[in-house]
Image: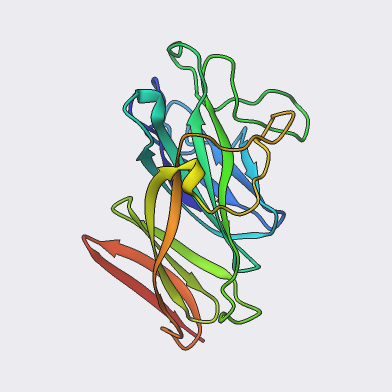
Length: 231
């Protein structure tokens, strides 16, 4: 589970933070009513944000500015999976005008099993912008079990083998980003190569075997990162 901040000016009358969850089939869902009194704090009508290629064991979210315009404020979700990969997804606001009173920027478009977050009057569409494979020195059975953004600019990840890693979240031009495979936009007919400024994770440091067992908890207090783990 993770709390996903909504960029300022995008939420209409909805909540400024929404709940998200990852699943063993790789799908990450948004629950637009879970933290909203008007929605009676309901988990009903989840929205599929994106589908990861492997089971998602941890997620973390933040917002970044990709430019000077309001539409350039993006939602960033990092998904850690059972292959020990870290995949960065960027949610951009799609066009459209202001929302009507009571409308949500997250909407279901059909009653079937396929969900999308793209809505006619302006919502968010997620795209994979970076996929970081398991480091060669990491254990073959490593899983990314915990994640947390620090001040929106640093990502801390922990694994089931006790490793803790720190990543800088930076914004660079798409032509400069050495990204992994790009997945298609959810709901789009074809995959699109990212253009313009993009969020990018750059590894800052590794603390191998920081714990004698799985990292089960990561939290932040000011500029202090707390982690806990054990057998």
